[in-house]
Length: 527
Image (cartoon, rainbow, N blue to C red; front, side):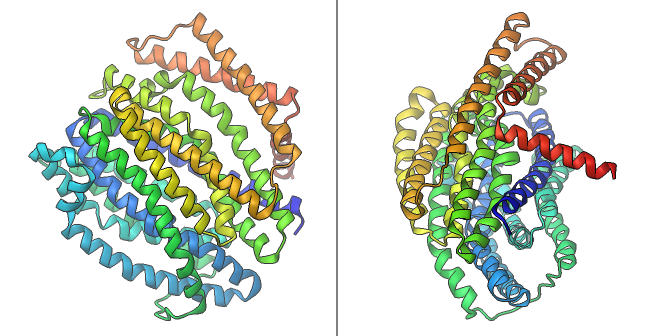
């Protein structure tokens, strides 16, 4: 396939994943609005977010962050150089292995929940009621890791087979489950937030059930296979160990933030959670979409030895990400308080909670470019089956995060923890970018730098337009919901029109490609 054709594959897949993820994020925000309205930002929500973070952390370690990532390049190589049957046999073995591992981990987690909460949130120990609630919720939700990690592996298989829609839509099921459980079951328990935990478990089961029909449709009829000595599994194992450690270091960064936030004033864990949810919108819709879409293409190019195309795909993917991430960064910084206010400020979530969450959002947003770019850089290393380099960079970023978190948490409170996370991510990206350049040579071409300059110019004009709107229609956090929504709508409309208008006038490659894709879609639909 030509390089242009592979770029179109990446763009098309990123569009599918991005649209599905956008839908998921919309339901995610509805979920968070419901949670904020019913439970606010206090002792119960802090306990829930700590309990939910533990199985989520293990999901990323055992699912998305290690086995899945180690699995996709090897699986793709089997598809390209051997046969589909051989690749699907490897998938069955990997699924069997992961299932056994997850049963053991789930049982251990349920038994060791008090110890886990003590390590995760030592600040809760001084409040026995909060500690007991966190332990109870952890035990209730820990088996979620079994279902969601299997979901992650199934998503990896489907993505490698170039099916992206169903895996990307999967989180919508979780969000709907959590919303309905909260609305319908919150009066059924002594601790109303238990309903939210029930929703998490139901969501995990339903997400796994959703993947199976699509696997069968793609011809992936997976069945138990205990041939763990398979050569492919040995190669996955060699990638798995450094990947697991590297992912572990990243998750330790999250652990550190939660531990330190539990020591800070009440609500700090929740402020960080809600701010992270806002950042996850551009990150999930665009960065993760492009990273997900590029991994199979990069893996296939490495398997075929097409390293010039490999570097072109990296450059193209980064241009796509930054075309959205740079203006998103500007908009989130300029409109951080209105965004948080409109999304969450109702019921138990008051103006003070909005200001505190907006503070965390500011510092997280400073690292949005790094959170986004790392998705493609990591995909490049996964495709090269090199996990030692990301491991070294992750270890350095851990040290940076620990040092800066301790240094900044007292003057900036929870905002300092968010800033430390952003700085550590920036260090990680810069180190890996340097290492990747040494491994494959320069991968950022002239088109990348020209595109970046145009994106910065269009984003600067967008910032000016938002500022002018705020002069005419000043922001007031105490205004009615209707007035706050109008302010945010005017600012976003002005920003979007200015950015895309400026990009069109500057003849940005990404803008031209977007218009070309829309024209082709309209022509095909007309026929």
